[in-house]
Image (tube, rainbow, N blue to C red; front, side, top):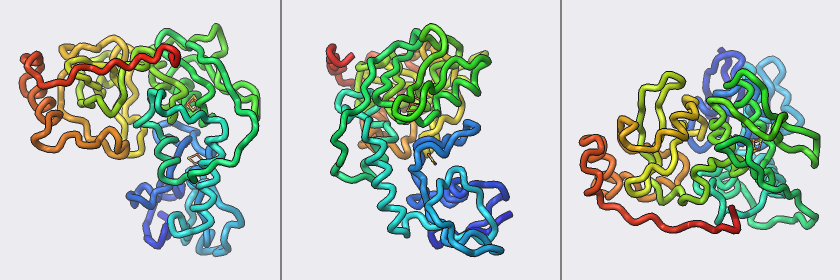
Length: 340
Ligand code: SF4
Ligand code: FES
């Protein structure tokens, strides 16, 4: 075990843990943000620099400070290490620069982006960014392409976090896509015939922190903050079958995996559950989803006595028998054809 001090709080963590894992053990607002690290995928981290921290003492044996800020998601703890995150001005100002850097090429098209409301970059920019941007040069732009039957890639929004690459690599037998080229020319691409076809391909949509990979069955169908997330499960022979159903009225608009407080998938799900089971009768309803971080979605949801709380309670109790009686709003038409 190693004893470290993180933002003035002492904690003992297992040897080999990273600084970010130690901070997550403490929890709360002192945890550094992460755009590329993903605890359920091996090898992630070290790409985006969102999680930079200051190590003011390297270890008990060598208490010298580390000369530069370090990425907390890939830096292992040492016994006696002292780390500063929210207490350090240099960290906070550098994080503003990281937001600015990530937004150099990422378009500010949140009003028409399906990821709006559950976008890690949106949250990161809101919590840590500057209002102003200085970049005036030409930005990278790509055409949107279909990669497989269910997934749309909008490379212009990609921040090259590599999460989708690790997901495809680690969940499926064959490696079918990756990052081609380097530097300014780097892009996510499929190797063969622009297509990702396997039973777990839909998970790359869930791990994408921005709106670069989107669910074609949900694109422009609704805004997430108008939908009602409900936990449900089914017996599935390919995956855990534990999902979130996103309702608008009586309709299941999309199915996603469940995520933890850091917006990371807990159990990856198969394409059958995600794309082919969109009837309430396909599922056993468990109850309303507790939304931790994506505050836009959780706004006004699930307080006792509200429409949503009543809805999920009733569906859970009656197992979708009287669904026609539900007090629902008619779906709003959101189909900006030009943006598709
Ligand atoms: S497409 Fe999404 S998940 Fe993949 S590298 Fe780009 S931002 Fe990351
Ligand atoms: S989360 Fe640590 S570098 Fe991206």
